[in-house]
Image (cartoon, rainbow, N blue to C red; front, side, top):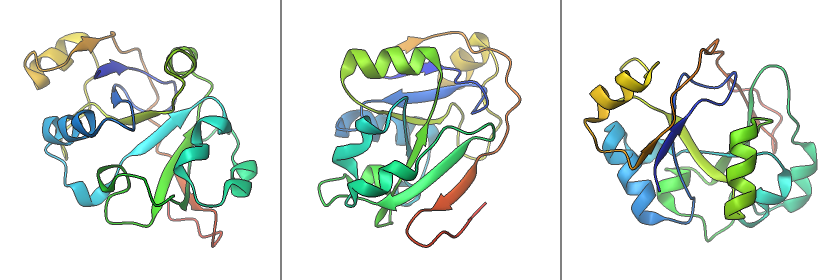
Length: 165
């Protein structure tokens, strides 16, 4: 399932799928014309949704929802798809208090892959019309995006403490 939505303070619009769907991951990368080397982010409302994706589960206790969106890098478990982690040995995780994301995670019992709804290097869709024009009917499901401040996230490697952005 691929869908579009607007988590507050993340992106104007998001493409998403379940992280264990190789087909969904490939489709998102294809839609975006995104290199597999870059990897993707997982969103969830609760740390428990990330347990199967990380090597050191104790580090999940350091994750928190912040006013400034924060993406945390943790060593990925060996079973994590290369399409999800890219050319890295880490996985990108972000907690969110977005109600739609929370409901979808609870309904599926899974974290969700999230990436901006755009062709790599191009502007992000800001409306339902934009989504339809950019992706020319290739999305399975669309939810109209809302206004967002497009705040860039901080990226923190929890193993080293290094702030990458």
